Length: 241
Image 1 (tube, rainbow, N blue to C red):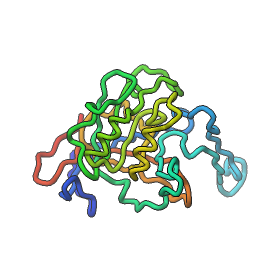
Image 2 (image 1 turned 135 degrees about the horizontal axis):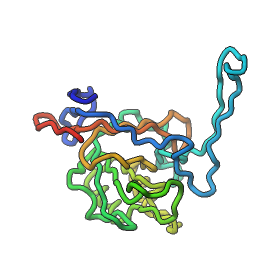
Image 3 (image 1 turned 60 degrees about the vertical axis):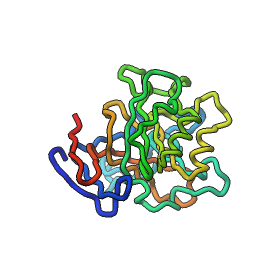
């Protein structure tokens, strides 16, 4: 999509201005199962062929087993909030929205000061941390960078509609109270976890991360992408490297 300029009907930026974007589409989805992070205790992804056209069947038909929190996925409020919204309760446009990717310096937590000032009402905040640094070994690590409660509060104060991280959870591994999950999901702010932000420069984008329409489900795998260079109308277009 390099060199294009498009607007999406019904998709507005902060303040209701039409949202334009240009530049490439960046896939921020972890491939299943090879590069997807699996949280300890969750069942592994598996695919089995019920029919196989390579073995003489007319078609190939597969069955898949996976945890809804494996790889890049969305958490809905029902994940922690009794009676909270499930993924199928949201309209699809809730997951097509302007987003800002913030590059967070080395450290165990995303702090309130790392929340970008560009984040406004109705936008998504995505945090690129040590979890995405080049050279970090793949797989699950208990010392992943998580979100602080103060940063979560700051996101809410600035009107975030979705918060995303490049690690397996918004809460630190050892924090069994899950305060960040409870705060954000309790405020009707869905969470995007295990976003693959290794090659994503900080800046403004259009985020598309549609969950499957799974009735009653507290989470869903997503194919998450960023379209480079969204700006509000009547502002200069920027081009992403």
